[in-house]
Image 1 (cartoon, rainbow, N blue to C red):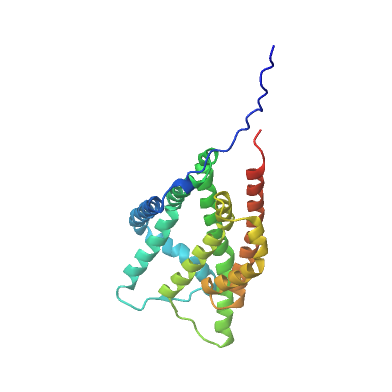
Image 2 (image 1 turned 90 degrees about the vertical axis):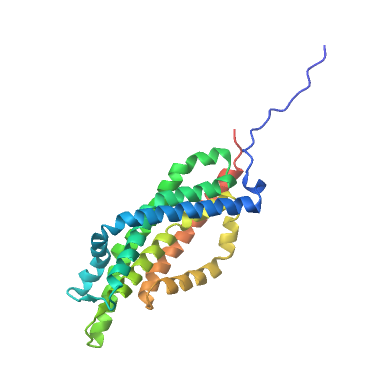
Length: 260
C-alpha cells in the first residue's frame, strides 16, 4: 500500500496589496476625489461656524487678553471685520471637518493596506483627529500664553504701549495652532508610511541629524521670531520623532511576525 505523498501545511499569507496594481491616473483620480470632498465639507461647515464667529473670536483672543489685559485689538480697514469673520469661520469649519477629512485620507491610502488592516478605519479617524486636537490644545494652553507673556515683557523693556492689529494676532494664533496640530500627527503619518512600505525605522535613525536641523527650521518658520517659541515647538517635534521611530519599529515587527 503506497503512502500518500506528504504535503506541507499551507501557511496563511497576508492579503495582497492593491496599491501597486493601480495606475498613476487612478491614484490621481482618487486624490482629486479626496480633495474635492474634503474642501466641500470645509466650505459647508464654514457656513455653519460663521454664524458663531463672535464666540470663536472670543476663544481665539482669550490667551492674548489673559496676558495683555485691557490692550485693545484694532482693525485698520473698512472690510477687515468681514474678512476676519470669514477667516475664522474657515479655520473652525476645518476643525469640525477633521473626522471627514481623515476619512477621505483613509480612503486614499487604504488600497496600499492589507485586507485585514482596512477594518481599522474608525480607530484611524479617532486617533488622527485626537492627535490634531491634542496639538491644538497644547499650543492654546501652553505655547500661546508663554509667547504672549514674552512679547508683553519685550514691550515693557522699551516702555512702549502695544496697539495690536486683530488680523496679525489671529494670523499668528491660527498659524501656531495649526502648526502644533500638524506636528502631533507625526506618529500617525509615520505609521501609515511604514505600512505602505515607504518609511523604515532604519532610515529614520540614520537621518536623525538632518531631521533635527529640519525641525528647527520648521519651528522657525511656524513660530514668532523668538528663541523661546521656537524651542517650545521644536521640543515636542523631537519627542514625537522619537515616538514615531518606536511606532515604525512596532509596525515592522507586526509585518515580519509570521501568522499562525
